[in-house]
Image (tube, rainbow over all chains, first blue to last red; front, side, top):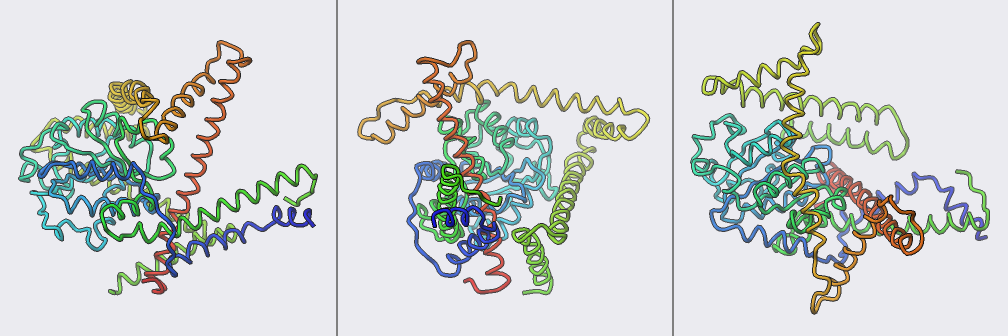
Length: 281
Length: 205
């Protein structure tokens, strides 16, 4: 009997597991369930750093998210973007990956994510520089001269924009919010903004990479948000009910299912070894 | 919804379903979607790069004639397809040199000193037992893991126990990375499912 159960578990067609995962993803989106959500210390710090930017202070919104991994970063990106638009701050949007501007366009296409909706005027409250090619040397050049690209995303000379007239280098920046899905861009950001200018940096980052970034936290990387969980936590803190809050239930349910799969199959594997049960695959 | 939006939604749905069909088995539709994504990505990079050169250099030549230098260096890359491929080494040398120089300037601080500073935490935090435990784990984990890579002594006796502890911490770190990879996969999938339910089937509010 036990042998039969163990061999059945280990011989199961992976497509059944895929089907169960899909059902686990779909169900909470159709029938809202409420799984508990704990707000991380890092998310609290993340909000505190944004709130600490003084009125009229400058935030660098460094959106270098690759479109192929956009799904993971979209929710925290959108929640953060909407939150900083509510703050009385000035924003420069810049990208150091070629598809960063496309990710930014997607974010700004969401309802309630257009700076105009918050009374922010282009050239006075916010400027979109677009993509600056050149990888880490480009980040270094930008920290040294915020007008290094010469023109904004639509080709307007930066000297003609009121907001840029009194901005020179990294010393004029209050906070860097770097959104990316690559460890390379993350390390360029830390090396150039923190090591060279000791600027406060917070990340919206691809969740798979977060363990690799932990050595930078909390000295160089002050706080971070990752995935829909991070977005949902910021939603809780800011009193919004955004995309993160909707998606996190699906993610939590499937993670619970994954844990069950991993534990059950490992126990079955262990029993099959100790009892020398033969399995097909 | 405009006709264009409807067409784009259906196109997006088609490609999403083609990719998801891999969950059943590998098939030509999945491969078509995969190759299309790679091609579209390469196209996007090319257009964005070309636009950056046009916007940031060519249109600015009148104001700053010195921009001709990086433009010419960029053109030298294409000599790799000619009888003078050696000429492409000059811009490559410049890029590598500048890249390494810029990174090296800050790498000691960010990747070495800063990370050591991150481990210098108070071991006992009054009134916060969990934070104290965390800080002790950071210290023990860092020291034992570094000792594991200390090859001047055989890993046995008391030293061997410490390196084994280091190995356990590394295993936990690998598990954390694996767990995060599962999490990312799910997080990439959820918005696609949401798109299908909301924008295509209209069964989600």
